[in-house]
Image (cartoon, rainbow, N blue to C red; front, side):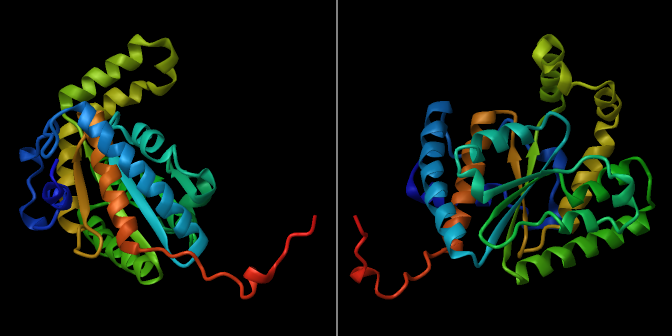
Length: 276
């Protein structure tokens, strides 16, 4: 990949003309800008080193934070992306939160209450495995709220993310897009491997039957919640090696733009002598 291609990489995937985004035309098998797995691994290795250095600066600076949101249909690869891309980083500076079915306590509050508690503090990289977007996806598909409420939530989420960014939390949002056939293969792999049975639920099949409804819900979400300040990136995720390279590139580039700096040292350090 040339330097020019690398600089323009994110433009392949950033949802900019939101009203025109057509989920059905997106190709989960696409690999623009990369020729093969080995090239992708080499790029990811470089990005891992970049992220490691920038994460240390972010943690030491303690003035800003990065929130990474991962959304996908079942088997979309959120766990694998977290493990592969962010696993090599210093765990002291990474905070991963997985959002499951809300608890009774969470349901007693507004839907953003549980989310705000887990946004990363200054100096940290926070990763959401699922997120506040479940409340305009799952609840929409299962008709737990009506369309009028869904549209209000789009505006509330945009305002919430504006609030976070105005207070030093940069947001990156990735939708890992897989095909229906790829999901079938990944579900079958969970059935074929005994050590993966824990990841399979019969409910996965019930949700798979709602594929078209989820696609419609994702398209509406991407069209309504991708402002220039916090756009979505739709990542072709059928090929895991491509997914990992692309996300690592966008994260590393974003950290570089945040430009975290080591704090200035205390005065007089050059005069200190460590006693024997």
